[in-house]
Structure formats: C-alpha cells, structure tokens
Image 1 (cartoon, rainbow, N blue to C red):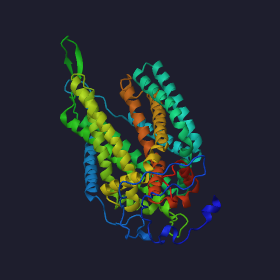
Image 2 (cartoon, one colour; image 1 turned 30 degrees about the horizontal axis):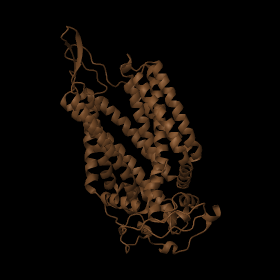
Image 3 (cartoon, rainbow, N blue to C red; image 1 turned 180 degrees about the horizontal axis):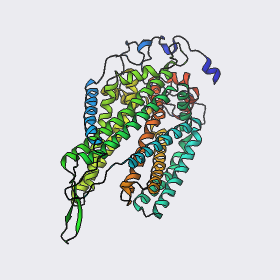
Image 4 (cartoon, one colour; image 1 turned 60 degrees about the vertical axis):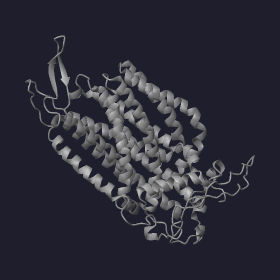
Length: 524
C-alpha cells in the first residue's frame, strides 16, 4: 500500500486539470461490471428522471480558492443575529454573576443560603474537567485500536450500565436504576444486530483515523473547540446559578400555612426569571451547536482536501488554517443558520418537557408529550441532514439552503444513503458519548457524597448534580467526536462526488465499498 501511495497520478487525472476542483460526477446507469464472487448482481432499473446538475460545469476552481468558488460571505443575517444574541447573554451574565457571591436576607427574617459558593464552584469545575479528560482519552483509543474499541465499547457499556443500575438500587436511587438498566438491555440486544457491520465500520474508522494522524491540525481544532466549550459551559453554569438569585429575588420562596395549619415552603418563580432561563437555555443550545458545527466544517474541509488532492501538486502540507478561516469567516453565517434551527427545536422541546411535568393538567401534559415526540423526530432528521449539508458548505462555500438541497439530491442519486444507514460510526460515537457521560455522572455522585457540598448537605440535589454531570460529559465528548464523524461524512459526500478519487487515495476502503456496495462505484 505504501508503494501505491508513493505513486503520483497523471496531471490530468480524472479529466480535470490540476488547477480545477473536480465537479460532481453524474450518476451512471450502466450494467454492473463482472464481479469476482459466487453470483452476479442484477442490473439496476432504468432511471425515471434525469440526474440533476449540482454545479456549473463551466465553473473552475483555482488552487487558491479550491474549497470556496464563491468567496463572498453567506447567510450574513444569521451571523449578525448570533453575535447580537451573545451580547444579550453577556448582559444577563454580568448581572447574574455579581449576585452569586452575596448573601442576602429575606423579608421573613431568614437568611438565604448562597446558591453558588466556592466549594460548589470547584465541584462544577471538577465535573467539567472529568468530562474533558474522558473525552480525549476515548478519542485517542479510537485512533489507535478502532476494531477492538468497537467491541470493547459494546461489552463495557453493557457491564457499566448494569453495574450502575445495581449501585443506584442499593442506595435507593430508583429512577436512575431504571434508566441505566434500560440502557444496558438495549445495548445488549443491539450487539446481535450490529456485529455483522463491524468490519466495514472498522475499516472506515481506520481510514478516518489515518487521515487525522496525517493532518493533526484536525485534532488541534477539536481541542480548541473543546476548550472553548469547556469555558463556555463553566460560564453558563455560573450565569444560571446567579440568575436564580438576581432575577428570582429574595422572596421567590416563602413560608406559608397550608389548609392543615402546617408551615410549608412555597416557591413561585417570577416571570422575568422564567424568561431569562428560557433565553439562557436557548443560548446554550445555539452556542454549543455552533461550536460543534464549526469544528465539523473545518474538519470536513481538511478531509476533502486530502480526498481530492492527495498525491497531486495541489495538495497542501497543512490545509487546516485555510479550512478554519473559511469556516469562521465566509461560511460562518451558514453554520449559524443551520445551528439556529437545531437550537430552536431543542428550546421548544425543553419547554414542553417542563409542561409535561405539570401534575395538575393531565390533558395538557399528554398533548405536550405528543408534540415533544414529533419535534424530537423532526429535529433528528434536520440534524442528520445538516451534517452532510455542512460538508458541501466546507467544500464549495455554498449558502446553507443550497448546500442542503444539493447534498440531499447528490446522496440519493448516487445511492450513498444505503451505505450511510449501514455505517456504525455514528452509533459508536453515540455509545462512546453515553459511556463518557455515565462515568462522569458516577464520579460526580461520588464527589457529592464524599465532599458534602454546602448546597447539597441534606442530599436534596443529588440527582440534579448527577444529571448535570451526565449532560456535561456527553456534551464535551460530542464536540471531540466530531473529528471522526466529520471525516466519515466527508468521505461519503466526496464518494458521491467522485468515486475515482477514493480509489486513488484510499484503495483499501474503495475495495471494501466495491464488494459491499457495487452500485455506488459502478463503472469505476
């Protein structure tokens, strides 16, 4: 294989000159070439429509702007809206954080405990640090032992989930017991369905990891994104803690006498606090999704550069700076647009989840549950769609809507959608994220029990801290895992554009695809 990599292709490889970016390939409808197997696959049905044209055939791409035919800024309105939203969050954060170090006295003569003391702050920092270290460790193992890690992750996840369920049962945390037991059963059943697909996933992980090692800038970009999200998560946590004190007021909770003559604590958050919390929730979703998508677009540009220009004079020694520049400048608006859609869905679903918890109105709770399920399905489709659309944004610098439309037609016409469905990469990363999140939540529980945080002295907020640890661990892992996921998505889209380039740059992966999905590379 090393000898193959050492060969330089012809200057007019694929029919394109070296200063041109290869245009998308049109679908081929020729009969299958003879296969070296036990049977001949049937020919495909004739096409019922003319394949669409995705780019102007007369448009050329010079080496200087190989990934951005249109150097102009795209979706500028979304970029402006994002920075305006950040400015509003900074204003909320300024007033909120000022309140977290003050202890005030309520009207009933009792002293309100500080919501966030230094011990609680150290606890939050520790939770974030645990998720950070575990995320990096899992990705490093994925690069070194992809096949073994897939199998280890399956069985270790099952054992860990059952062990966590047993532990929480012994401490009478029954809700967490049921949750972890369900995860264990689901992954145990999934093994019998996924094990036949492991060889292809192993080769894909090996290929993507090899490119990542060659262009280590992708790892640096992911680490920078992880550090930014780490800092933002801490900042957001401090803001939320202070918002309860500043916008909630001293009288948010008061002592009242119930119908039986007992004195009870009654809490009623004011409307301004609810609005602030919803906005902060929206800001968290939009900002974290945008950071994730920026890493994805940058890494996609790196992989596309390798895919199309490996072994040619056009190949850059380090395509990371130019790819990162495009993602953060001309394509920033497109990234903000796509991430805004996801953030809106997630914010609405978060509100509906709160409505579902209302015990006083069962019909409204049921209706909210139905709407939440529908939105969850739509959000999953949009997120799946965005992932491949952003690859077109990275390669060609298209506006978001055009990239989404072209990506969908391109993938459907080349038959790549079946191969995407058979890929285990996304499932492996999801499993890794759940594993990291679970370990983070368990360590968080141990920290809370050992160090007895002031706000949780009576163990009233144990479940809250454990849930926070789970969310932080999963969020941090998702950003780092974007390297592998982005490389996989870019490989699929570039394969749809030009299968011959894969035969040149990754012959082992090409042969595996030829054997498994011959319709994708027919005629090559």
